[in-house]
Length: 150
Image 1 (cartoon, helix red, strand yellow):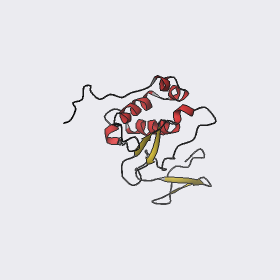
Image 2 (cartoon, rainbow, N blue to C red):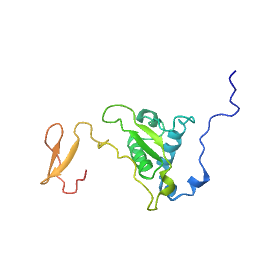
Image 3 (tube, one colour):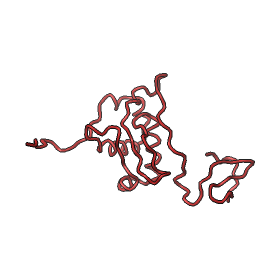
Image 4 (cartoon, one colour):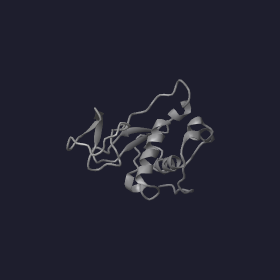
């Protein structure tokens, strides 16, 4: 016989997290994204959380969501298990406790995101060489900019 759930689902945020150095560095958008990603946690799937760009579009712009994900992984709240953008699959995240060590020598960087630019669909710039860009698709570049960084 199944037990009925007495309370509705909720997202638990500990006071220790709210007082941490990493939390104080979070943007509002990153915290909002974290709460929504964390809401997918059911007690057993801590290393298998996905929150797609389509789901995030209901709460924020996709570019803001991309920045929020970068911030959440850099500060140690999430770890990237699989970056699916380049393969047209969803990203898979793991909840992380690395935020506890943020700002100390014990802090370890998480997995790096695959390189892509959310602003360019037709061309993906991969580098600058002698003030000319190389493109994956056409080996050309419309803009010449000394300050272009990848």
